[in-house]
Image (cartoon, rainbow, N blue to C red; front, side, top):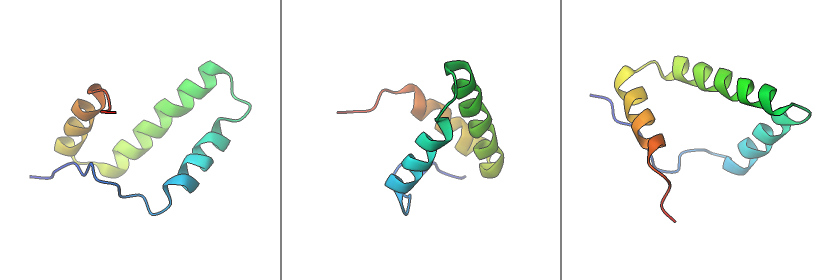
Length: 66
């Protein structure tokens, strides 16, 4: 059984966040939401594991702890 990794795992989290913000530059709210939806589908396809994706959906429904 595959398990979702919720530990910090990005080699350059700040760099990725900057790229993500840059990708949204100049987009309307609707375009930005469509971009996010496409990105989610691209990443879900890359993961490809139904169990990990189900765990991801469940984890995303829980608000982050402060």
